[in-house]
Amino acid sequence: MADTTLTHIGQTQPRPAGLQGVAADWSSDQRAFKNVSWGKAMMWIFLLSDTFIFGCFLLSYMTTRMSTRVPWPNPSEVFALHIGGSDIPLILIAIMTFVLISSSGTMAMAVNFGYRHDRRKTAILMLLTAALGATFVGMQAFEWTKLITEGVRPWGNPWGAAQFGSSFFMITGFHGTHVTIGVIFLIIVARKVWRGDYDTGRPGFFTSRKGRYENVEIMGLYWHFVDLVWVFIFAFFYLW
Amino acid sequence: MAEITANGLGQRTLHGTQAHDPTATGIAPAEVHQEHPIKLYLVVWAWLFILSACSYMVDYFGLHGYLRWSLILIFMMLKAGLIVAVFMHMAWERLALAYAIILPPILVLVFVAMMVFESDYTLLTRTVFFGAGP
Image 1: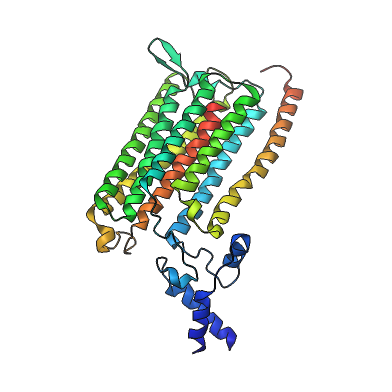
Image 2 (image 1 turned 135 degrees about the vertical axis):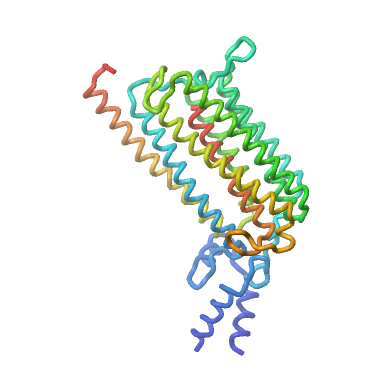
C-alpha cells in the first residue's frame, strides 16, 4: 500500500531546473542519468576517457614543441602539395577536414532517419559515412607515405625539431586508428539496420540482446567524436 | 518502515524502468527520440564548412601572431561547440549528463598550465646547459 503511494509521489514530483536539478539527479539513491539509456551513457563516458587520451597526446606535443630549442618545422610548408605548378599550403589537410565534416553531416542525418525507422535511408547514409571515413583514412595513408619518403621518422626529419615526427605519427596514427575502427563498426551497424534487426528485435551476435534504433545514435556519438578530435588536431597540429 | 519502503522504491525505479518510458522517471522528457528537422543538420553542416574554410584561410593568407592564434582558437571552439551541441545532441540532454561530460575536460586546462611552466623550465635549462649549440 505505502509502496504504491510513495511510487506515485516519486513519479509526479517535478525536478528543479538548473544546478539544483543536477544536484538532485546526482544525490544518493538516484539513477544519475534519468532519461539516458545505459548504452548512451556508457558511450559518453568512454568518449570522456578518450578525450583525456587525446588531451594527453596534444599536451605532450605542446610540451615538446615548447621545450625544444630547435625550430619546429613549418606545417604549412611540410603539408603543402604541388598542384598546377605552385605549392598550395595544407591543401590535403583541408580536403581531409571537409571529408570528415561531411561524414559527420551524413551520420547526423542517418541518426535522424534511424529515429523515424526509415531503414533504407539510415543504412545508405551510414554506408556513405563509412565511405567518407575510408576516404579520409586513404588520404591519411597518402600523407604518411609522402612524409616518410621525404625522410620524416619518429626520431628525426630534414626540417627541424626531431619531435615533429614522433608527435605527428603518434597523434594522427591514433586518430586514424579511431577512424578505421569507426568505419568497421559503421558497416556492422548499417548491416543490422538494413536487415531490420532493430525492427524485429533480433538478438545481437555477442550480446544476445535486442538492439534498438538508439544504437545508431550511439554509433553516431562515436563518429562525431572522431570528427571532434580532428577539429582539435587540425587547429593545434596543422594550423598552429 | 518508511526506510524499507523507500529502498524498495529505489530498487523499483532502478530496475523497473526503461529509458523509453518517460513517465516512470519522474520527468516528462520531450526529446527522448531526438527528432529534429533535417534542415537543422544541413545548416550546422554548412556552418562547419564555413568555419573550416575560415580556419584554412588563416593559414592560406599567412596571418601571424596573436591574430592567428585567437582566430584558430575561436574557429576551433565554435566548430567543437556545434558538433557537441547539435550533432551529438548534447543541447537536448539532461544537465546532469551534460555537466558530467563537459566539465571534466575543462580540467585539462589545469594540466596545460602545469606543462607550460614545466616546458618553460626545460627550455631554460637546455639553453643554460647546452648553450647556443645543437
